[in-house]
Length: 296
Image 1 (spheres, rainbow, N blue to C red):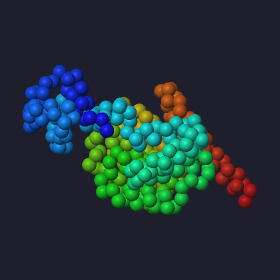
Image 2: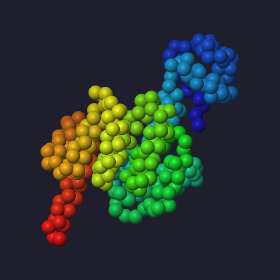
Image 3: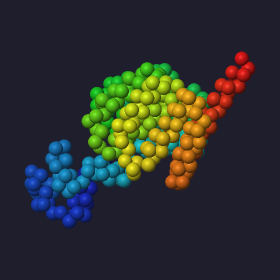
Image 4: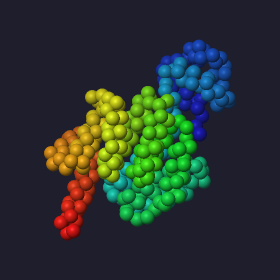
């Protein structure tokens, strides 16, 4: 771990602040000087105070501590998304091996991360990687955390599609309660919105239309602002998916294609491919069911 004091000093000086300018935080200049030299540590409360004095959010500071890289889970998810988008099964297998080798470092969290990779690898390859014990461990962890933060939201939204439906619904409702404390944090608000969108689409795919309406109601309460274009487009896509799956509305297919076209227009080609594949899968399944109806 890098010297927090050394990094803090760089940001303090870059803002043109002197040691004595921070004495309002209740820390002497000598104590702050020793902290910056790595000779002593500060309590959490004092550290938060001095960050406030230089007008720096703690997540921004920690980003610098990690050499301006994302946290471990986000790095992992970025690699998972890349493998899924490019259908790189071998790359995903290497990622799984890497996670399994790291499980001993922070056993609980690496174990949960490993389960996440297994789930996404199985979905990508069609081969068996996770089992019921893995899903039990995952749900036990999520049920066991009283207040959900960034980590739990990310894990849930990336694994919810494989959970048993009743378990998934209980967790989804609990998620809303357990993350109330963090909803005003912008990045968490966006995570919750994405989770709700994923849950909405999952319910529609499973033809659990009453449960889908629950998530539609939650999403309407999110009140997406105009700059949240991705969320607005995917919500519109999902609403039309609902109309098509429930009522067979053919116009809804055209509207979903328009949403995908708008995503392409924004230059999000990988994302557009994902939804093109999703729509193709939905239409293909309905076509197969129609053929089966003709045979029998």
